[in-house]
Amino acid sequence: MQLYHHPFSLDSQKVRLALEEKGIDYTSFHVNPIVGKNMDDSFFRMNSSAKLPVFKNGSYTIFDTIEIILYIERIAVVSVGNNGIAFSSEEVIEWMRKIQEWNPKYFTLSHIPDKYRTFVSKFLRKVVIARMAESPDLASAYHCKLREAYKTEEKLKNADVLRRSKEHLVQLLDEVETKLNETTYLVGDEFTMADVMLIPVLARLVLLDLEDEYIFSRPNIAGYWGLVQQRPSYKKVIGKYFNGWRKRKTLVKAWCILHIRSLLKRY
Image 1 (cartoon, rainbow, N blue to C red):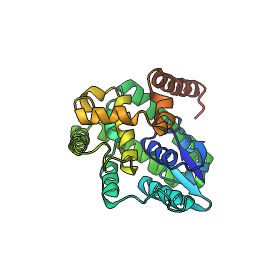
Image 2 (image 1 turned 180 degrees about the horizontal axis):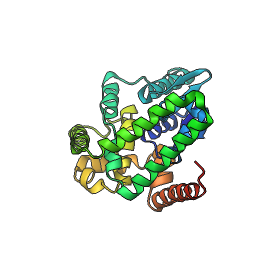
Image 3 (image 1 turned 90 degrees about the vertical axis):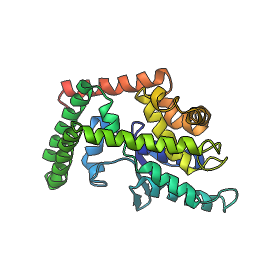
Image 4 (image 1 turned 120 degrees about the vertical axis):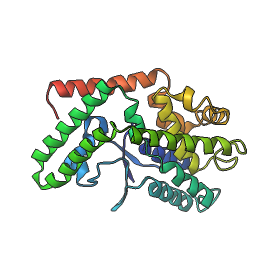
């Protein structure tokens, strides 16, 4: 089994947490979207949306995050002969879908300083143009990604788009806060795949230095956040890259790679 992912990708974090929680072995392939590695023709031919993660088991390929996680769960059940592992309940799947409905893209980008966001956006457009020249048979698909990049920039100027994204997030967190008033984890007192979906959302808020506004202002979520950070899966998938000083190291490393490649015009 192979997973194409990156620590910066929120959906990649969800899938990796599921793999770690279920104890599934897999081969890891880092595809850094910040420097446009998801636009390389080898990956782009496999997934022209260029989105992460991508999960492969032999010739079977899955692109949808929830489908990947439920597939991982089925593998885990089969591997242990249904001993101690159950399939996700309807309530768990409902929460998984509810969390996945919130798209972090515009919320995240709107909280990145303009100079950094603009620099990365220009760099990635140059990457797409360079890949287009190298693989003319994929020109049409690459053109779609260019148009998508320009549309993203336009939407970031639209206050209504940003407001709706924030309101959606607040509504989701308020529901979670209410639910955690009754249970230890999102669906009962046992950790489930619903928690796998929620943890990266909270980690993204911390990465953006928004934990005071969105996490610690909600006592139940604050307690939950402290609890889930103790799990080995969290420490391996997220904490390794973003806890404490590691966050600065991860971000500075990415920024340095971008600048070097930009100076050398290595798109």
